[in-house]
Image 1 (tube, rainbow, N blue to C red):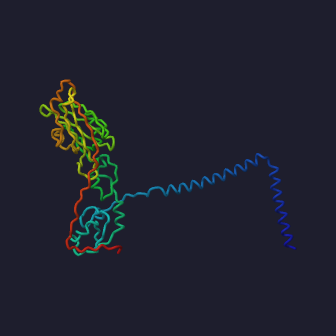
Image 2: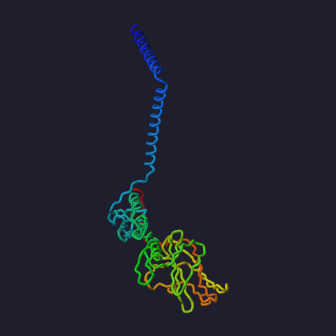
Image 3: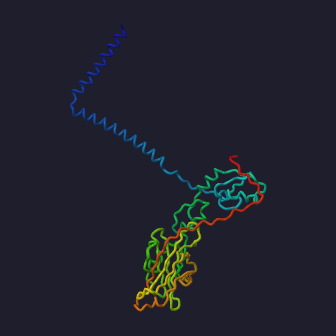
Length: 343
């Protein structure tokens, strides 16, 4: 009986509550009801946008690169105990604790007599591959961050390696790209952008002239020089760079130089050599006739009956990159070598 009374009371309360809400809703104007519903919907949308924003921020954080830190270490930690050069992975540790390059296992006995068992150093490899430093030519414009054990290779091929201005009495010394600006600003030498594989007309008002060419791709700097050679003229083209032609990865170029008399197509001088590099060292001594390869323009082209100044045609072609020089590994004869796995 008490249970029935309780249920009856709950039912009455529910009905009264429902009827009370219904009565209040009926008593409220339609505009107020719609406004409340709109506020509820807007609140729900804001909550959904906030959740989506939190998910998006989480995804962005995951996509971000790992934070970097600059630390200072002693050089010996990154140098091989055998060859004394920067460690090159994969690295190994001998049974006496010496960390060496993998290529030095056959010669390590000269430093550590009796060592015959080597274990791979996976942890050391991780540090060696990530240790980076600014390029040695940072002050001349190179912005590269170079892995330490590859720094020497990068330096040998870096296009920002500084060269000297060849003008007599000028001591300007900087990267080829900055030299091109210097040539134009300080000496008023003509500077022209050149597209590889396309011919370019270059005027040569002798007896002495320099004309600067800058490749559109890679901003490589070339210097065309001309000087008198008796009754003839010598014309050369060099790539302005300090590290020479043989550095691994350094781009190589071939050029075609030719000139013909304005009044006769039969008088032609032509040369198609590989482009040599020049650091412009020994300022004041640089001239076309001093180069290993130059084009000799005979008098009939220089002193054409038309009276027009000689015009040189230049075409520069890319010829690949310098290949890596390989050195045969040293043999240890009866050397006993055992490479272990983790241990």
